[in-house]
Length: 205
Image (cartoon, rainbow, N blue to C red; front, side, top):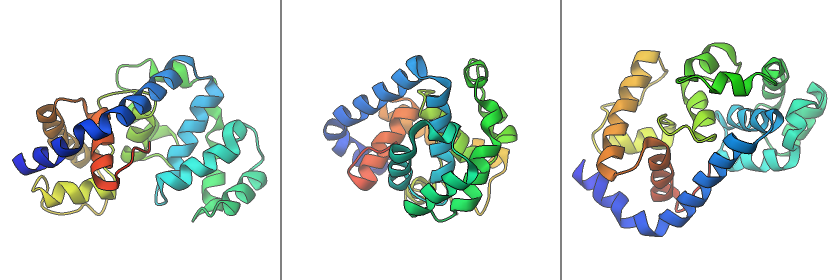
């Protein structure tokens, strides 16, 4: 744990401006974004599952709020053009999730809306639901992707990489990472951005 914090402290000042700027973007989206903007961010998180944040960012820039209205065939073609690994399946998920447009703000007004997204939105599991909510400035969810899990294993926070998620396991691993975030002096949402900077020397989302 001590070595982990030391590594993070080495990049704290270098990463801080980018982390704060990104968090401000998240807060602005939550405060001022339209339902279509929020759905675009939700769709971005669906796209990054088993793909990459960089790829998702590229797709989101091209498609924008088209996630809310393009036909399934049009979405499929655009996702294929940007090189998504599963363009057909992701287009289908996104179109099938459009029922939530107009309801997102009501849902995220709950104290803990994550399980609703896990249970009701196709393509969002625990990790992706956490990702979406963090990207709209919910501070208390950890995004336990493969990169983060490898770091957790490297520093002895977990013994093995999980092959799948149950609610119990996800919340247990999340609590372990939150303890590191507390020692670092940031909530888990911002801590994840510092962690990504430590891994990749850049702040994505």
